[in-house]
Image (cartoon, rainbow, N blue to C red):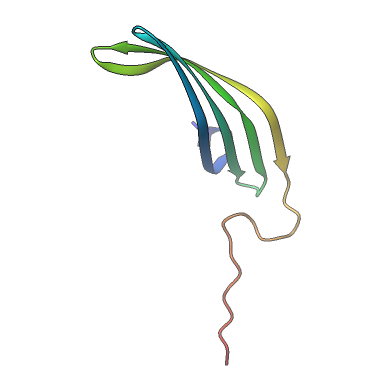
Length: 94
C-alpha cells in the first residue's frame, strides 16, 4: 500500500488509546504520528487521530471501521543534507 504511494520507508506511532465498550461493540480513539520517506528524499509527517468502531465476534475484537482525521501534514524537501537513513562514512583515526 505505501510503496504504491512512492514511499520507501514508513513509521507509524500510536498512543493514548481510549476505549469505550458497550456489550459486543466499542469505539476507540488513538493519536497517531506517521513519518514517510519518499524515494526522492522528501519526508512526509502526519499527525492526527484514528477513530475506530470495533466489534466482538466469536470471542475476538475486530476493527469494523477506521476513520483517519489528520490534524497536521507536513512535507519536508531535501536540502542537500544527508537523506534520512543515510550516514556519513566513519572517520578512522590514523
